[in-house]
Length: 232
Image (cartoon, rainbow, N blue to C red; front, side, top):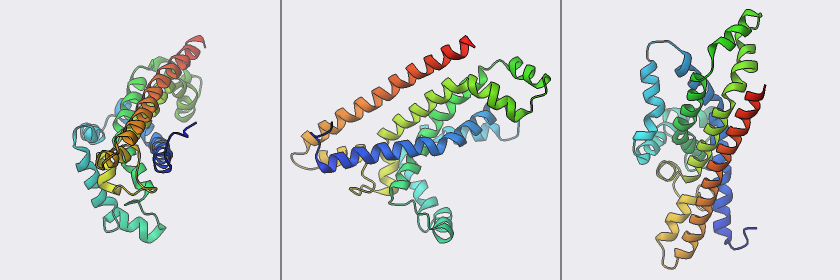
């Protein structure tokens, strides 16, 4: 299917898909939790939390990557703790690329889910409560199905963002072929060497197709889920 790619290009594509998937999957539970806090919570510091969540959208990606390096590098407070106690290393590993992509895509994930939560008719949840359902069961059986379109949209937006992330990733984990060289990093590498235009164009085309496909899939899945919910 991708026989027209060289081994280096194919490795970059596979790594990007791997990084994007795990970035999306790992951030999903936190995204749902934070979105619920922002949509329903009433607490001191809510505006601060909202600002922190959306900070990666306005900070230069290089700054985000540098902050991750300071925190999760081998000598950083979090990175050193994880390395010493659990043997988990993020800096200059593909797992670090997934972390950087998760951070950059997190605001998009949270925003999509939060909008869905705010659109839920609270009377449906209250009706379930009057029938004796506890809050956890209400969330699983009433709220979660209703916000599913937003969750799906947020997941795919986060995935697409992760596929195209460059600045934070290359700052945090560098550009190591076979380990941290994702699609954007590989494209950048090709543009820096003579005769690399063909490889850059091939990877650019794949990046556009995957990202556009993700956005179209998000729209189709969200519509199908909305129709099924409306039919209930």
